[in-house]
Amino acid sequence: MSATDIDTDQIIPARFLTTTSREGLGSKLFHDWRFTGNGAANPEFILNQSESDGCEILVAGRNFGCGSSREHAPWALLDYGLRAVISTEIADIFRSNSLKNGLLPIVVNKATHDWLLDNPGCEVRIDVEKSTITLPNGTMATYPIDHFARYCLLEGIDQLGFLQNHSDAITNFEETRPWKP
Image (cartoon, rainbow, N blue to C red):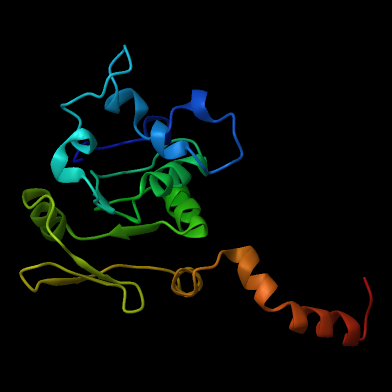
């Protein structure tokens, strides 16, 4: 998808935000583009085309995820089966929500982005530990990612999971600190 300024209401329309569960939101992903007015799949929409079957990476246009903050947007992408979004620009709040929920937002340069758009369905290698993406032609690009977010993605945990993994140290600190709240 190469459209620009795709906001969170286009990713998951507000009328589907009545749940606090992540399950089932993938069926509402890009709902107003994926489906016609009578509920039939829109054959023109890229995710409804056979070459998108099984893809785990969405190559999106500039300023992806702009608009209101809603965790439902990365939840819907993940529930649909996507694991990463690649663009030349990803909105800050969407990037933060994505990383906190296990979706990898990757910002690449224009040349890499253009190559991906010109080669839909190609297999790319994403190395989270090294913050690199390698194209089939051998071209490698780096992408920025916060150290803590990288750690959580590699460990398969979120912020709460990180804290739970350190519960013994937290308890020890609370019991041995010289001051009490």
